[in-house]
Length: 287
Image (cartoon, rainbow, N blue to C red; front, side, top):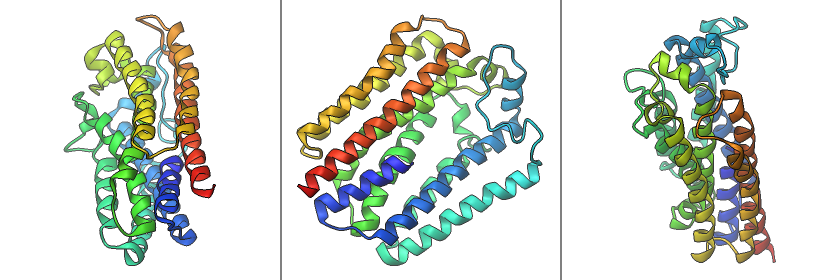
């Protein structure tokens, strides 16, 4: 979440010469709290739905939850209170920002909260439906919304530039979250969690994973061609090396541990690409 917030803020400074440090800090606190709420509420409902327990008890599957509930470290009621406290902090930050930047920022808070909660919570549970809803939600919540929202906080208005700027980080974050399903897709299938990996099968899902990677880096080129990023931002393409190397070593069908390096490579690509984009955009603005 740090990367898209920084990108939107840097974009506001470079394109509009607008930067308010206090608003940036509030945006960062609110976004991080919202991110924690998203992770924790997913943890909570995956535990209640039995998905995390199934992954923990399935041989060869790798559980990706925090372990605080499945390991009995925290009680469900206490964990729920911690979860809702994260949302409360995000709402408070959003309320303060709306006073200084405009009430439209509250739409980001509302939509973000709904996306986070109903990912695995009833009655929607759209993350369990295997229709691509969860991937679209990740793209919006970790790409367009934080970049455009942080730009709006700084400038008080919307623009297409931050939307275009959000595309690479949106696709690459979606890639990261999509790849983590490979770690426990058989347990998800047993628990009735229909991710795209479960619906399509491992081989087709791997093809889509590569498509997401290609689309993410193609959108960097689009940003340059449309003048949103400087030409030297194409250096970000080098960060594709890590996941490409891992893909070459994967077979059509793999054991779950084989996907751990892909997760690490996807994370490195997402973060490093975002850092290069933000740094080159800032250099353009300074010099």
